[in-house]
Image (cartoon, rainbow, N blue to C red; front, side, top):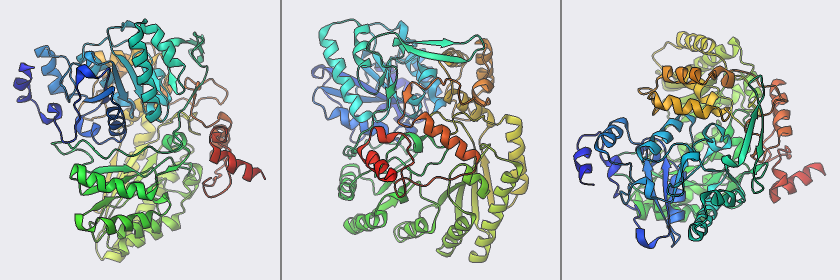
Length: 612
């Protein structure tokens, strides 16, 4: 690629595209039968900070007959130069065009990266539509949390991996290897893949809609295609990646990361990850201790993040932290503990890190009133919130970051006022403890109804109502000690439309991309007019998907994806929410009969004990 050097000197941060990072793997292309390229379809600095890509990258490259390389979405300046110079998009490791690989795997973690997927395929000179790709084109697969409703992207993806990808990816790649040797047509490959547990092949299903425009059904058209796709669940977490690729430029999360547990059983009703990553699976402390040492030795990081949906719920987290500092006390180790519970235990846990590096303190009350926290099953009283804040200030923290959600089901103006009142009380505690103004960063996100949650049927509030609530809080919290930030309701509306969309949204996504939609999650590139026009030209409305309350008996476009939670449980939880009834954490109290007792031995045992 002689022209590449000329391009790189003209773009922002050329190291996004040079590859050659520490621990990057480049295998012998000609001696490796199955070649994958993995992509998180967003900016390099974001992609290298995700946890899914490193897991699969190391897993695949550990196989002697497979290789995995990486590609991320090129920033618009680089994309423009690639088009002008006629260079097809290439992988970071070998600089080979993506169209030369056998499999392209996308990790879909955010709905507004969908147009980036199309842009990557276009820059790679690969047909966007799965129906237009022949045997000479790579197999395009996708997984991640967004794959739990695969329908909006079904036109573009050959097959989806539903659930934990560690086992499925190797099974899929092995099936591809055998098919490649056989010389059979690509349609035969898709039928073979459809037999694998946790694999969904959209082209083998027929979708029907009613005259009223409502989704009706999705039906297999091939014997190999299952009517329901069960989410794959690894019962034991595989070894964590410890040869992490170290970027030459600063990443969003510029540190090592170890997943100490997967899943959460607290049951927040708006949280898709908490619903669909069940059951909780913990990594053994000794495995974590060893992995930290390996990352320190292999990557040069001295800061390690212990990753979990709820890190303070990890059994023995205090002992684990103490053990890490004791074992690696001579290596200047710093620990990051994201996703902590809002209680004094978390404050004391973070305080134990203060001698090494004072971490930021972030909590998520989610709602201002106790009533609304009961609705979302947050299970945190105002007294506990204020006690936690007081303890934080007493231990020397002067700043807190607090996350709240606007537009939650049943939310009233009083609930919004309660956010400001709670912030007032926290600020007052800080002033008394610190004899000065505390610094409070308050982040407001918009509720987005997600599939496979108790709120999947709920309507998102419209822009006018959301803006009124934002203005109320801007007025009430106009103080020097509070820094307020919020989401653009238009962006949140698109997230909700893509989240609950059906297969007809494929035409909307493609048209929006043609009109220039790319990097929609970045405010400087987001253009709502592109999307408004794309919906209109496809005779659809974003409000139909985002802001309509769905009747409980209406068929859902994602119902053929079996997340493990039964519809009966989700409907029961939706009713509990409307009644303001909380349910307990099933790890410590009785089984909530969510549906996992069908699959998991530990859940079946707890269910039997609860019934007894």
